[in-house]
Length: 96
Image (cartoon, rainbow, N blue to C red; front, side):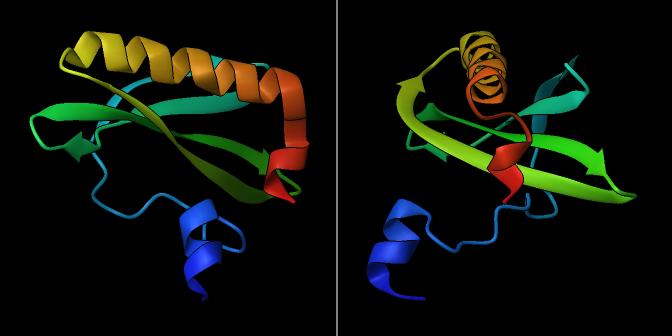
C-alpha cells in the first residue's frame, strides 16, 4: 500500500485488530459503535469502530480522529458521539 493511501486511509483494512481495548459501546440505528483505546503518549486519541451485520456478514469500519484528551470517560463519550454522526451522515455506505 502506498504511503498516501496508508496516511489517508484509502484502501486500508478497516476491521479492528484483535486485542483492541473497548472503552464503551452503544447500539444506534442497528449499528454497534465501540470506543477503542488508542494511546498517544500520555493522552488518549479518539478512535472507534462501527459494526453491522449485513447479509449474514459482520461489517466493520474503523475511525480515528485527531482529537486527544486525558480523560477516558471524555474520549469514550466523544467516540460514541462521533460514531453516531458518521452513521447519520453515511449510513451503510461506510462499508463500501
